[in-house]
Image (cartoon, rainbow, N blue to C red):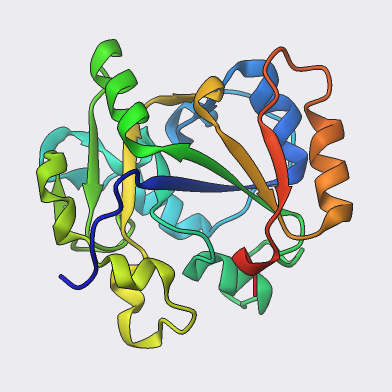
Length: 213
């Protein structure tokens, strides 16, 4: 695969800004399967039929674990899904655009270390884990199989599948491992900062306009 594996690769989870307060209060991000049993306030983004498929998509490396039982991350910002929100795709029920969407950024190696210590299964995929077929890996020495050039390219039409590679962690992801919240503009930076103002842990909130379309 093209591209050099970063020395300290980061992972990115996108969520509506109005979800931040509940995430901070819970102390973690939950998988979709867990969220089904919880009344969590905030705007749901994503494609419902894909979310349902992810609940039955088993991970090849962990056959008893389904994609929907994991918290998903991308390997870069400016995802294909964010683009669909930007253009307000007819495939999405959510029509609020990209500006309210924030990126929660974490360190991949720190996340894997936490998962291993907690006995949480994890894997990374080479394409969209919501598709009918995808490959996954559970060995960080195989990170070179990810198309890292696709993660940083501005124009990804020729590498759309690779751009949607994911990191998946079982059940939950701890809020304390969020290193940064990247937002579209200064208005959303203030809104995000206010949402977590009462949290015991408050990651840095930064305006990252180049992470958006």
